[in-house]
Image 1 (cartoon, rainbow, N blue to C red):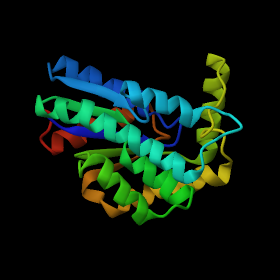
Image 2: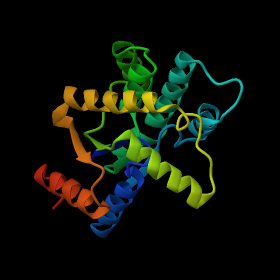
Image 3: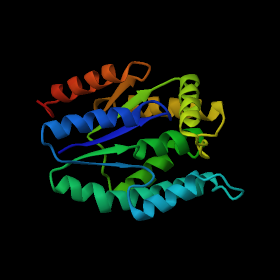
Image 4: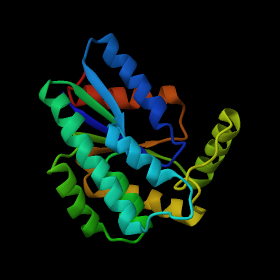
Length: 211
């Protein structure tokens, strides 16, 4: 069993890549669960709504971070640890690295403070591999606009932040990947979904996690 986290800017293709891996695991009869942050549990989904909704009472950066960490703590104990104990793979759309990128780097709270809170919320649990789908902010905006128009939806509070904020998020992810390069793989999200999955699949084979 392995714990994989998928990270990147909105529109980078995390969901598509996760679905491709899920199909492969099903074909190989490998048990897994998939989840997301914030969310994944009853409490987490309630916090997700509060975090992402646009309102006149948006949380301050510190409060925002603590809400993410509360969702994460619940997710780890309620879903992730039990699944790993049952020898299941865990695939999550975002995990602790998102707090480093969004709150630690882009919000300016500080790398070490977020590291410490991540450690507390997860009790030291880290993904075996974090897959970063790296995408320019400009391309992320184009993809989000297309998705919103196609599905008739509006950007949430975090998605609606300005370009400078999202550029800081991107740089935060790249910084996190450089710090723990053996536990990360950085993919060029401008490539096709098929190419991205082939790269990931070959990486998992190289690590002897898949045959």
